[in-house]
Length: 339
Image 1 (cartoon, helix red, strand yellow):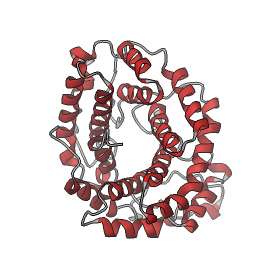
Image 2 (tube, helix red, strand yellow):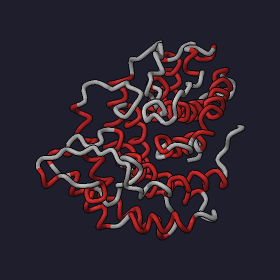
Image 3 (cartoon, rainbow, N blue to C red):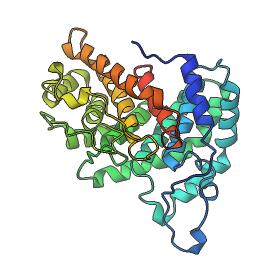
Image 4 (cartoon, helix red, strand yellow):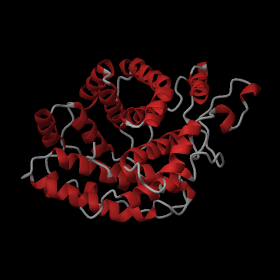
């Protein structure tokens, strides 16, 4: 593959995250005020995740740092990453985030996108082998448990999936939650997520892929496929995938193989399309790895992933509207299949 995750690239991505995970402003809050006492700034509300423009981006900025630290512990930039995670992942900070989550007005806080990223961060910390990683994992574990429980309670009430290409996408949330459940050995959460995936997507066929929309950063079609790859046993997934995208080996629907054009990277919504290209690359690489070696779609999928990376990997940095979050999606794409 032309694009691979090297220590040099990983260090560059980590340097971007270090530049924003504790940068408080500008900031976009997901915050319900019940009274004047709730008029507070990001750091007061979220001592752990107050940077990166918004809460969920700060969470996955920490995920990026933890993942790079695990994959490349000897990298030149490892020391500042370790220092940052030591300073942030403390019992006191986690307790404050838990207190915010328990507010009556926080029931829908960051649902489901931020929930999913928090679970993936908890899974990444669980994978850490060094003593400091085990310390970070233990510190964050109560928050991971709280979001896992919140998802368990929510899924039975979620009669329908959300197929949008942005934060409310339910396939993305299930995919990340399934990874958390596998790493943590949470069989109850795993079963609940698989049940939801089957109920929401099991009968889908002949996907027309009406995408991209103007502010997509997830492909509704490919994210659903990646979710089902994780939820179903291999042979069952292959049969489902053949029904879902029956002409994919012929390059149809063509829109799934064509990178999105990004007209204005200073616009916080339009730059989502760089994220779409990176997340499609992540999905195509992951899906390709699940296909038999002789499947004609395998080569086409890998080629599509490379072209999507060509389109947006050079633009991860440059303007804060993309820079505060795109590196995480680049790492997902470049590291697809690493674990």
